[in-house]
Length: 153
Image: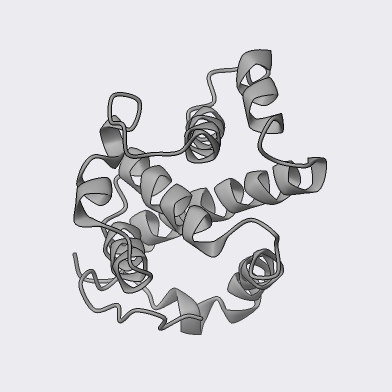
């Protein structure tokens, strides 16, 4: 897809607000590799090619295995993800696929076994941020395949 607008140039102020969330999350106690894994999974759900390309490259640059990337959309059936990762993935999926009502208590309780209250807020902000980026890229187009690892760090 040819980009409809260059969001980074046209919407600098609007994007600056979203970039602030990223700066905040870069200081979170949640591992950046886990956040990137969440970003990749949410981008799979939303079908955002630019974000999938970007986070796959960042994850590989951080040493993530191809096997875990290939099987991420079937993480429930694959033995390659830790309990903490599973809790975060379930939380991210529930927030991305909002069907009305609260996230089930079981998902919250599982996540709280691995994350502090502040980390739950941070995890939620990460899910909100990637869903926002996905929607911006899908709405306006993005140059898929052009991202270089660490480009927006």
